[in-house]
Length: 426
Ligand SMILES: *Cc1c(COP(=O)(O)O)cnc(C)c1O
Image (cartoon, rainbow, N blue to C red; front, side, top):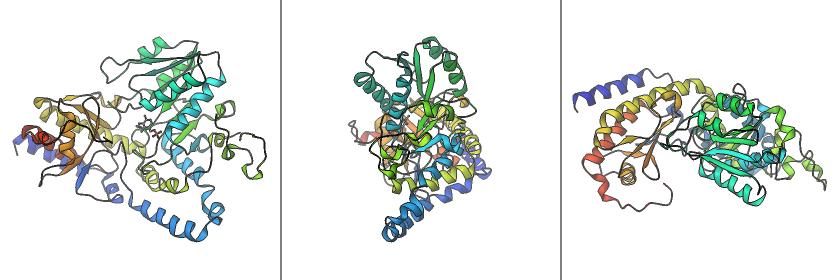
């Protein structure tokens, strides 16, 4: 170890020692790898195994249909209330179910239908492509006279509020943005964007997939209209876990779910032949909730609420700043660049780094030669290695070890063992 390496090693150990959230990592299964992909698929909480096996062994196997009344029918509202706490909303403003793309479709459709004379939608080139596809589909199929303005980011890292303000006009139906963007982790000032939009009588639909569970979101305090988000990233809900949707209370009755289905009906079990929408947040339901995967989300959400989102955000800020410092010291000199905002208040909880050999370095991190530790980041084209920090279970020491391991891969050209060709899921 060089002197500077030893210095950072000691710093990492000291940070971990002073970390009041350190014990939360014991609530997750240990592994002998470093997992930096909690922003894509969170780890499995130990309690989730108990909850889901009880559901299968008792509620499903023995209780069968009776379990609907005993355990299941209220589960969506119970989980919604826990998510509400985490994102600063009222319990009756959150629907949980379906996936993020479907929920986004519902809100985009509803907003465009509310005032069809407003024909402009504003988004940006940093947004998650699925959201853009949903909008493109709506414009092709239903709202052919509408237009979609995609504001380009000059540096592919951030976009200024002024750039959004310039596009906004009275013809704007809504702005839709990822609160924390998936590649660079740039974070918008939610309150400011909401205020700008409201001045022009436009709405904002936020995508919280990369913020919920990692940054302190307060939808009510920031005057948010609508939002969607997923629960399988920082919230540790499991693969394909149900997503959530938020609609401000006073807007709910004005917005219509484009999918008229029985769970959004006033009285689904009267089997009336005519549709009548519920007049609460459940009007955004569709069909039967996915009970197994919904139940699997609870333990992960409880852990976030128990740790406290403000505390998690503080830790995440310390961790991402420590990581940036490590990258500046050890990786910039060997050909890396940082593709995330350097101001900690303008970013979420992951750091993207770029290198000409990004994809192959990412492979070498995951599949090391014998003796080295495996590290799981993810890769986003063209050359981003994303290092996701989940403050609930990642340690400072892991960040230190990651950076030194990346340095070793590059210096010893370990990445040359891999092909350029990409695997199916990156
Ligand atoms: C992960 C993610 C999604 C996921 O969408 P699904 O439809 O639930 O698969 C949506 N938006 C953003 C910004 C994401 O990061």
